[in-house]
Image (cartoon, rainbow, N blue to C red):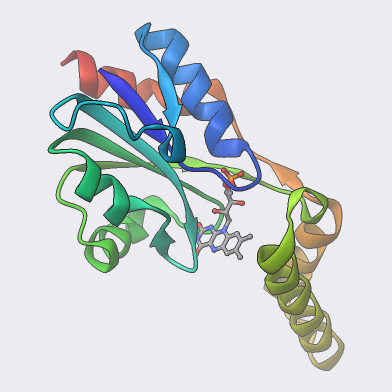
Length: 161
Ligand SMILES: Cc1cc2nc3c(=O)[nH]c(=O)nc-3n(C[C@H](O)[C@H](O)[C@H](O)COP(=O)(O)O)c2cc1C
């Protein structure tokens, strides 16, 4: 079994390393996984960007035997998992894990995208007193870290069943 992961700011990598310890198997970043056997049993972990699970289609091309998929994100809730499954055409068991966000950990295009989102939220805040927008603006400003080892319990339970 090998954990294959994709990360931008590092929270998915933290989960991949934690799971690697729990399962005593290697965790390999997808761009370094070219030499791994196509038939290796794989757990794929990645992060959500605008509803898209990054590099999932790449992982599907690279591996025939994906046992489970973990999507790391901030805004998705358990009841929206079906949307993620449908949008990304995920054929395997899917788990959602709460990630982290800090604008200072982002680079290039993602930093720009989030900078723009932040400006929009602030503009919206000025117009209305929407508490949701307030909450979001606060989160963007201060950053948030929801990564917790316990989130992996359900994944381990599934794999051991
Ligand atoms: C540009 C951008 C778009 C995002 N879109 C989503 C999303 O659609 N759904 C979600 O739950 N989280 C979304 N997030 C939150 C990330 O999935 C979250 O920060 C995740 O922990 C990042 O993983 P990483 O630290 O491994 O890069 C988005 C983050 C960024 C920067």
